[in-house]
Length: 368
Image 1 (tube, rainbow, N blue to C red):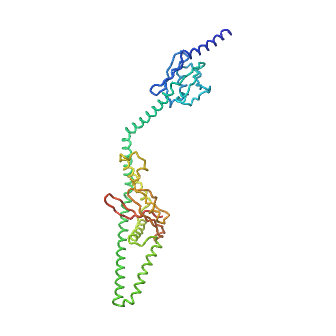
Image 2: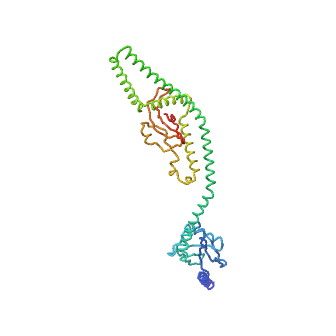
Image 3: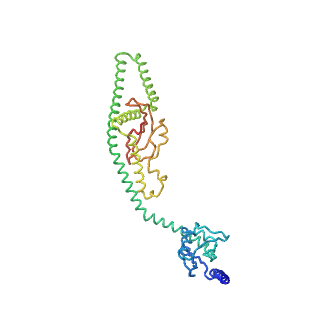
């Protein structure tokens, strides 16, 4: 038994050495994929394993070998320094230096020196191929994707427009009512000025003389100046006729909004959503800008008038998001009015930009 065992061990060693010499492990690269020609121990035939260098790992190659030959019980990859290579390393990392492949008791020395330049070139070619494939996929499917995005944006625009329709109808009615009252006050002011002129003229040329009425007219004019300054102190606005008109218009607008339960905040949210969707749809339809980030297409939407907005003292205002339909010009605030309940108003003067035409409209944007 002893004499039979010793020759068997010697024969096994000679077989292991002979296998490494006669049937070495060869590694070649074809079409960017490494091909391992490994002699299997059961039948002593050579089997080729084609692996992916970046996706397959040493553990995957080990599983391939063991599944191909059920007689393989142990597979290990040993580096030049004698350290076992972990199964989590990729095949590309394995081929960077020479190594030893141990299958059961057979040891194979693998030389990867000829693969150095070819492996680097193959990885570069693989990266270029991936980039080309991604570009081709983008070119083939971009039109379809843009069409789907366009249909989705149109559907969302239609949905937001449907939600805005009752708000627009109510806003139009409130705007007409507020404008009618403001124009009535404008004509009433003109009538009061004419009545004052007639009264002073009557007292100057019929009832009294100019010597008596001169100080009266002076104090009347100075009192008017004091009233204008008091208007500035209370409202933080210059006393100019357009601003006075806007203020009276907005006062009436807010009062009518409370009366008709008009939700100004919800209306502003829908208007901003609609403006953003239209801007995105216009950007998507532009062949030169569809692939650019939004930071480079800022001119498609109205710029924020930050300097004008910061000019006012209001602490609460509408979020200053850029919109395509509303261009923020300036903001102001004034003390609470004697309405149903106290409010602090933020006024936004807006201008709707239309090609070859500009329509100015004043809209009450926000109140708290």
